[in-house]
Amino acid sequence: MHLLYLDDSGSAPNRNEQYFILGGLSVFEAQAHWFTKELDTLAESIDPKNPQSVEFHASEIFSRRNAPWKGMSREEAKGIIKSVLKILAGSYDSARAFACIVHKDSYPGRDPVELAFEDLCSRFDIYLSNLRDSGDRQRGLLILDESAHETSLQGMARDFRTLGTRWGVLRNLADTPFFVNSKASRLVQMADHIAYATFRRYQMCDAQYFDIISSKFHSVGGVIHGLSHKENENPECMCIACLSRRLSGGRVPTE
Image (cartoon, rainbow, N blue to C red; front, side, top):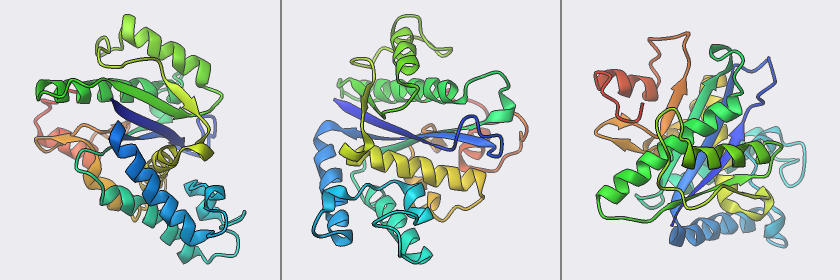
Protein backbone atom coordinates (compact mmCIF):
# COMPACT_ATOMS: atom_id res chain seq x y z
CA MET A 1 0.00 0.00 0.00
CA HIS A 2 1.21 3.50 -0.84
CA LEU A 3 0.18 6.09 1.75
CA LEU A 4 -0.28 9.78 0.99
CA TYR A 5 -0.27 11.90 4.15
CA LEU A 6 -1.78 15.36 3.65
CA ASP A 7 -1.92 18.59 5.64
CA ASP A 8 -2.50 22.24 4.78
CA SER A 9 -0.91 25.62 5.34
CA GLY A 10 -2.58 28.99 5.08
CA SER A 11 -6.19 29.80 5.87
CA ALA A 12 -8.77 29.43 3.12
CA PRO A 13 -10.97 32.37 4.33
CA ASN A 14 -8.09 34.70 5.30
CA ARG A 15 -8.11 37.53 2.73
CA ASN A 16 -4.70 38.71 3.91
CA GLU A 17 -3.15 35.57 2.43
CA GLN A 18 -2.97 35.07 -1.32
CA TYR A 19 -2.43 31.33 -1.20
CA PHE A 20 -3.82 28.14 0.27
CA ILE A 21 -1.49 25.13 0.22
CA LEU A 22 -2.21 21.42 0.54
CA GLY A 23 0.98 19.42 0.93
CA GLY A 24 1.66 15.72 1.17
CA LEU A 25 4.15 12.92 1.61
CA SER A 26 3.80 9.65 -0.28
CA VAL A 27 5.53 6.61 1.20
CA PHE A 28 5.27 2.86 0.83
CA GLU A 29 3.69 1.45 3.98
CA ALA A 30 6.90 -0.23 5.15
CA GLN A 31 8.71 3.13 5.07
CA ALA A 32 6.35 4.83 7.52
CA HIS A 33 8.16 3.30 10.51
CA TRP A 34 11.50 4.77 9.35
CA PHE A 35 10.08 8.30 9.15
CA THR A 36 8.46 7.92 12.57
CA LYS A 37 11.71 6.66 14.08
CA GLU A 38 13.74 9.54 12.62
CA LEU A 39 11.29 12.16 13.88
CA ASP A 40 11.10 10.47 17.28
CA THR A 41 14.89 10.69 17.51
CA LEU A 42 14.72 14.40 16.70
CA ALA A 43 11.99 14.82 19.35
CA GLU A 44 14.23 13.13 21.93
CA SER A 45 16.89 15.79 21.34
CA ILE A 46 14.29 18.46 22.16
CA ASP A 47 12.57 16.87 25.16
CA PRO A 48 14.43 13.73 26.32
CA LYS A 49 12.00 13.15 29.19
CA ASN A 50 8.83 13.23 27.11
CA PRO A 51 9.61 13.08 23.37
CA GLN A 52 6.07 11.96 22.51
CA SER A 53 4.78 15.34 23.70
CA VAL A 54 6.75 17.07 20.94
CA GLU A 55 4.56 17.76 17.90
CA PHE A 56 6.36 19.08 14.85
CA HIS A 57 3.90 21.74 13.68
CA ALA A 58 5.95 24.13 11.56
CA SER A 59 4.02 27.37 12.12
CA GLU A 60 4.04 26.82 15.90
CA ILE A 61 7.77 26.13 15.85
CA PHE A 62 8.34 29.31 13.84
CA SER A 63 6.18 31.46 16.14
CA ARG A 64 7.85 30.13 19.35
CA ARG A 65 4.82 31.02 21.44
CA ASN A 66 4.36 27.67 23.20
CA ALA A 67 6.51 24.96 24.77
CA PRO A 68 8.82 23.39 23.85
CA TRP A 69 9.62 26.09 21.28
CA LYS A 70 9.13 29.03 23.65
CA GLY A 71 12.51 30.40 24.70
CA MET A 72 14.28 29.25 21.55
CA SER A 73 15.96 31.85 19.39
CA ARG A 74 14.51 32.41 15.93
CA GLU A 75 17.54 30.68 14.39
CA GLU A 76 17.11 27.67 16.67
CA ALA A 77 13.45 27.36 15.70
CA LYS A 78 14.25 27.69 12.01
CA GLY A 79 16.89 25.00 12.50
CA ILE A 80 14.27 22.60 13.87
CA ILE A 81 12.03 23.11 10.82
CA LYS A 82 15.00 22.53 8.53
CA SER A 83 15.98 19.40 10.47
CA VAL A 84 12.51 17.93 9.90
CA LEU A 85 12.70 18.70 6.17
CA LYS A 86 16.22 17.27 5.91
CA ILE A 87 14.85 13.92 7.07
CA LEU A 88 12.65 13.93 3.97
CA ALA A 89 15.49 15.16 1.76
CA GLY A 90 17.69 12.27 2.87
CA SER A 91 15.00 9.59 2.78
CA TYR A 92 14.17 6.77 0.37
CA ASP A 93 14.15 7.60 -3.34
CA SER A 94 10.58 6.28 -3.50
CA ALA A 95 9.35 8.75 -0.86
CA ARG A 96 7.82 11.63 -2.78
CA ALA A 97 6.47 15.06 -1.90
CA PHE A 98 3.28 16.53 -3.36
CA ALA A 99 1.79 20.01 -3.04
CA CYS A 100 -0.92 22.10 -4.64
CA ILE A 101 -0.65 25.88 -4.44
CA VAL A 102 -3.98 27.63 -4.96
CA HIS A 103 -3.97 31.37 -5.68
CA LYS A 104 -7.33 32.15 -4.13
CA ASP A 105 -8.18 35.24 -6.20
CA SER A 106 -7.70 33.23 -9.40
CA TYR A 107 -10.65 31.00 -8.49
CA PRO A 108 -13.46 33.22 -7.17
CA GLY A 109 -16.37 31.23 -5.85
CA ARG A 110 -14.31 28.05 -5.53
CA ASP A 111 -13.34 26.46 -2.22
CA PRO A 112 -9.51 26.36 -2.31
CA VAL A 113 -9.47 23.36 0.02
CA GLU A 114 -11.64 21.27 -2.31
CA LEU A 115 -9.79 22.55 -5.39
CA ALA A 116 -6.41 21.52 -3.94
CA PHE A 117 -7.77 18.19 -2.71
CA GLU A 118 -9.16 17.29 -6.14
CA ASP A 119 -5.87 18.24 -7.77
CA LEU A 120 -3.71 16.15 -5.44
CA CYS A 121 -6.07 13.16 -5.56
CA SER A 122 -5.72 13.16 -9.34
CA ARG A 123 -1.92 13.55 -9.19
CA PHE A 124 -1.57 10.75 -6.66
CA ASP A 125 -3.77 8.48 -8.79
CA ILE A 126 -1.61 9.16 -11.87
CA TYR A 127 1.51 8.52 -9.79
CA LEU A 128 0.07 5.14 -8.74
CA SER A 129 -0.86 4.38 -12.37
CA ASN A 130 2.74 5.03 -13.40
CA LEU A 131 3.92 2.65 -10.68
CA ARG A 132 1.48 -0.01 -11.90
CA ASP A 133 2.88 0.34 -15.40
CA SER A 134 6.31 -0.50 -13.98
CA GLY A 135 5.01 -3.58 -12.13
CA ASP A 136 4.05 -2.12 -8.73
CA ARG A 137 0.37 -2.96 -8.38
CA GLN A 138 -0.15 -1.57 -4.88
CA ARG A 139 -3.08 0.76 -4.33
CA GLY A 140 -3.07 4.03 -2.42
CA LEU A 141 -4.66 5.44 0.71
CA LEU A 142 -5.10 9.07 1.75
CA ILE A 143 -4.46 10.05 5.38
CA LEU A 144 -5.27 13.60 6.49
CA ASP A 145 -5.13 15.69 9.62
CA GLU A 146 -8.51 16.02 11.32
CA SER A 147 -10.30 19.15 10.20
CA ALA A 148 -13.64 20.80 9.69
CA HIS A 149 -13.46 19.63 6.07
CA GLU A 150 -13.50 15.92 6.99
CA THR A 151 -17.08 15.17 5.90
CA SER A 152 -16.92 17.08 2.60
CA LEU A 153 -13.54 15.63 1.60
CA GLN A 154 -14.67 12.07 2.32
CA GLY A 155 -17.69 12.66 0.08
CA MET A 156 -15.51 14.14 -2.65
CA ALA A 157 -13.17 11.15 -2.56
CA ARG A 158 -16.11 8.74 -2.91
CA ASP A 159 -17.37 10.70 -5.90
CA PHE A 160 -13.91 10.73 -7.48
CA ARG A 161 -13.85 6.93 -7.44
CA THR A 162 -17.28 6.61 -9.09
CA LEU A 163 -18.07 9.85 -10.96
CA GLY A 164 -14.51 11.03 -11.43
CA THR A 165 -12.60 14.29 -11.24
CA ARG A 166 -12.29 16.71 -14.16
CA TRP A 167 -9.31 14.56 -15.21
CA GLY A 168 -11.11 11.22 -15.00
CA VAL A 169 -12.17 8.52 -12.53
CA LEU A 170 -9.67 7.61 -9.81
CA ARG A 171 -8.91 3.91 -10.11
CA ASN A 172 -6.03 3.32 -7.71
CA LEU A 173 -7.35 4.38 -4.30
CA ALA A 174 -8.20 1.57 -1.90
CA ASP A 175 -10.72 3.43 0.27
CA THR A 176 -12.04 6.83 1.28
CA PRO A 177 -9.60 9.04 3.22
CA PHE A 178 -8.72 8.38 6.83
CA PHE A 179 -8.49 11.30 9.26
CA VAL A 180 -6.12 11.22 12.21
CA ASN A 181 -4.98 13.55 14.97
CA SER A 182 -1.69 15.07 13.84
CA LYS A 183 -0.28 14.65 17.36
CA ALA A 184 -0.47 10.88 16.86
CA SER A 185 1.11 10.79 13.38
CA ARG A 186 4.69 11.82 12.68
CA LEU A 187 4.00 11.50 8.95
CA VAL A 188 1.13 13.99 9.06
CA GLN A 189 3.60 16.26 10.85
CA MET A 190 6.00 15.81 7.93
CA ALA A 191 3.18 16.66 5.51
CA ASP A 192 2.58 19.79 7.60
CA HIS A 193 6.21 20.80 7.04
CA ILE A 194 5.94 20.20 3.29
CA ALA A 195 2.87 22.44 3.17
CA TYR A 196 4.53 25.08 5.36
CA ALA A 197 7.74 25.13 3.31
CA THR A 198 5.66 25.55 0.15
CA PHE A 199 3.53 28.29 1.75
CA ARG A 200 6.63 30.24 2.78
CA ARG A 201 7.98 29.94 -0.77
CA TYR A 202 4.85 31.25 -2.49
CA GLN A 203 3.28 33.55 0.10
CA MET A 204 6.45 35.03 1.61
CA CYS A 205 8.97 34.51 -1.25
CA ASP A 206 11.09 32.70 1.35
CA ALA A 207 12.58 29.59 -0.27
CA GLN A 208 15.04 28.54 2.46
CA TYR A 209 12.79 25.66 3.56
CA PHE A 210 11.32 24.74 0.19
CA ASP A 211 14.76 24.41 -1.42
CA ILE A 212 15.65 21.61 1.01
CA ILE A 213 12.88 19.38 -0.39
CA SER A 214 12.45 20.69 -3.95
CA SER A 215 14.10 17.60 -5.46
CA LYS A 216 11.64 15.28 -3.66
CA PHE A 217 8.54 16.37 -5.60
CA HIS A 218 7.40 13.66 -7.98
CA SER A 219 8.73 14.29 -11.48
CA VAL A 220 8.95 12.44 -14.79
CA GLY A 221 11.19 13.45 -17.66
CA GLY A 222 12.05 16.78 -16.07
CA VAL A 223 8.40 17.77 -15.58
CA ILE A 224 7.47 18.22 -11.92
CA HIS A 225 4.08 16.53 -11.64
CA GLY A 226 3.96 16.49 -7.84
CA LEU A 227 3.88 20.28 -7.54
CA SER A 228 0.91 22.21 -8.94
CA HIS A 229 0.74 26.02 -8.99
CA LYS A 230 -2.84 27.01 -9.76
CA GLU A 231 -2.80 30.71 -10.64
CA ASN A 232 -4.27 32.58 -13.62
CA GLU A 233 -2.75 36.01 -13.03
CA ASN A 234 0.90 35.30 -13.87
CA PRO A 235 1.30 33.19 -17.04
CA GLU A 236 5.07 33.77 -17.00
CA CYS A 237 5.61 32.41 -13.48
CA MET A 238 9.17 31.14 -13.07
CA CYS A 239 8.58 28.72 -10.19
CA ILE A 240 9.84 25.19 -10.78
CA ALA A 241 6.32 23.81 -11.23
CA CYS A 242 5.29 26.29 -13.93
CA LEU A 243 8.70 26.44 -15.63
CA SER A 244 9.01 22.67 -15.98
CA ARG A 245 5.59 22.58 -17.69
CA ARG A 246 6.46 25.39 -20.12
CA LEU A 247 9.76 23.75 -21.01
CA SER A 248 7.86 20.54 -21.81
CA GLY A 249 6.05 22.43 -24.58
CA GLY A 250 2.73 22.02 -22.80
CA ARG A 251 2.74 18.25 -23.27
CA VAL A 252 2.04 17.47 -19.64
CA PRO A 253 0.11 14.22 -19.17
CA THR A 254 -1.08 15.09 -15.66
CA GLU A 255 -2.86 18.28 -16.72
